[in-house]
Image (tube, rainbow, N blue to C red):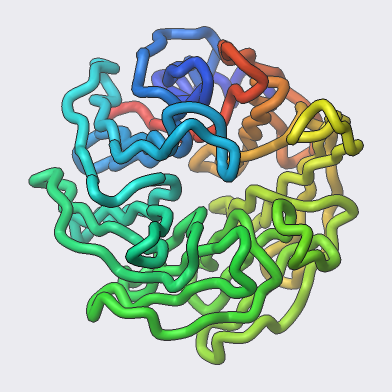
Length: 346
C-alpha cells in the first residue's frame, strides 16, 4: 500500500473481535498499530458499526465453545463507544439466546440480531431500537440456527442464512413476517447487491447431511430463487461486497482430523468475483479458517479475519497481494472473528 493510500486512512480504525480473547482490539488503519483492547463478555462473535451514533455493537453467542459444541448460549449484545473505546451498555435479549448476526438500518434506527431457536420456538431475528437500545420484537425465520443476517438497501426486506435448514429465510421487516424460503443447501455468509435485486449466499460447510458443491448461490430477490452458482474450490463461509463492485468470498481449506472438530487447517483463500458479470477475477492465500470479511470504504483493501490463526490479512484488491497481517490475541483455538471498519469522525 502506497504512502498516499496510508495517509488517506489516517484516523480510521479497524475493530476486530477475538472469540476466546474475549476482546475487541482496535488497530490504526493507516499504520496497523494496535491502539487499544477492550475486554468483553465471553465468546463475542460479530461486530456492527453505527456511523450515526458512532457506536459499535457486538454479539456474544455462547459461554464457551461454538455452534453445536458450546457451554450454553448467551443472551447479550454489548454496545461500545467507538471513539472512547469504552462499553456503554449491555443489552440482555433473554429469553432469546445465541445472538450472532448483525445488520443495521441506520435510517430507521433499527438493528437486527439473529438468534437461535429453542424448544418452544424457531430461530429468528430480534429488532432493537438503536436510539433507546431496547428490543422491539422478533421475527421468526422458521429455522433452528439463523446465522448471518442482511437487510436490503431500502430497509424493507431481511435475509437470514441457516447452517442446517435447506433454505435462506426472507422476511418482511415492515410487517414482521417470514415471506419466503429460498432453496439453498445450508448457508453461511451473505451479502445484498446495492440495488437489492440479488443476494449472494455462501455454503454449505457445517452440514454434511446437506452436502452440495461449494460455491456462492446467487439469489434473484424478485422471484426468490437461485439463478446461478459461482463455484469455489473449497467451502466458502464469509461473503462481502465492496463499494467498487467486487464480491469477496473466504474459502476454508481443511484436512479431516479426528482430534479437532475444526479439522487440520491449510491456508485459507480469498476469492474475488466481479459483482456485475460474476466472472472470477482471482484469489490470494490468507490465514487459517477465514470467517469474516470487510473492506475499506474506498474498496481498495480487504480485511479477512481468520479464526484459527487469529489473524487479519490486509489485501490490496487492485493487485490481489498481501499488504500486512494483524495478530489478534486468543486463549483457545478460536480467535479473530467479527470485523468493523470505523472511518474517522467527520
